[in-house]
Amino acid sequence: MRLEVTFQDARHAEWALWQLATHAEALAPQWLRASLRDRATTIATRYGAPA
Image 1: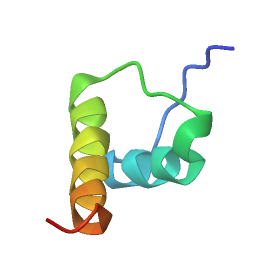
Image 2: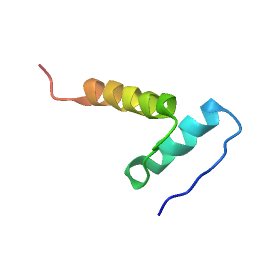
Image 3: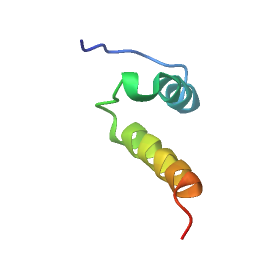
């Protein structure tokens, strides 16, 4: 299913998509995809296996 949604602002968009975790994927805009990727990478690095 594809939906086009509108958010109040960038912060709201990031928060809403993050809450959906793996149940949704942002296809656009690119800045939102990059923001979600960067946040996920930071969390994965923090909680990854110790070196």
